[in-house]
Amino acid sequence: MKITVNEQPQRFYLAFDKWEAAVGHEITVGEYRFCAIPLSKTVNISEVTSGAKVLDIPISFEMMMVTATKEGSMEFFKKIGKRLEQAIIRKNDFDQQLTKMKETAFERLGEMPPIETVEID
Image (cartoon, rainbow, N blue to C red):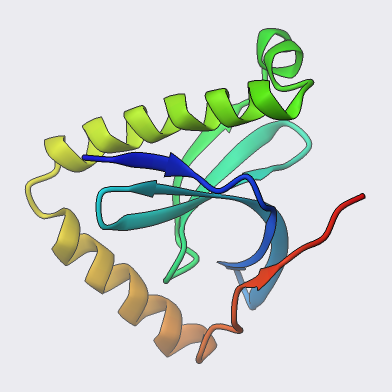
């Protein structure tokens, strides 16, 4: 599967008790889209079209050092893409799980707001 990381930050919406806006980067793994959202102690990896969390990666000191630059962050996100690829391969029913996540999010929260490009100076 081809893995790409969008260098342009975007505003995504995560499925909590309501749609919560968060800024991060899109990671595409084959036909699947995820967003990497740095939080205070973790990097939240969610599926883009449902806002459902797929992974939570603890932020370590080493990770902070690697992601201190944009280039380092993009490389780190590509490594996350590799982890996601392996998870997709291991799950024989990933498409079915994805469909269920979308249905659950939309039933609980309604339609997701559109994803937007964010300009950061």
